[in-house]
Image (cartoon, rainbow, N blue to C red; front, side):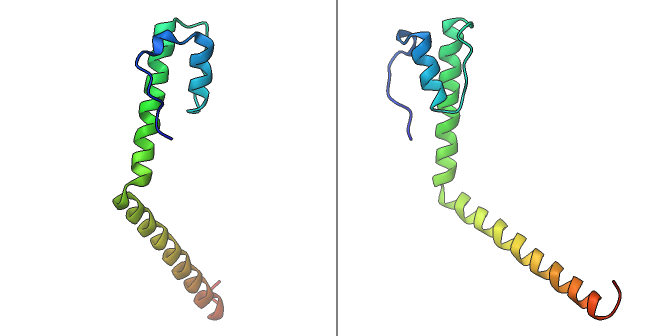
Length: 91
């Protein structure tokens, strides 16, 4: 989900800013100044876009799969070692 294109978030009400921020997982305190709320919404949207770019990056996907395979292989190797120790009566 890309950030909606709005030229000037300061034109939104505090309530509208709060609803927009919730879409990005941020809860705003409407007691803060409107300028602060606008900046918090902009930061949340920037971070969300960065996360989406990372999730869609082929090298990151490849790297994540490599970590997953490494963890699975490590678990299998550990289980085999435990089985060998158990068979020899070392446990």
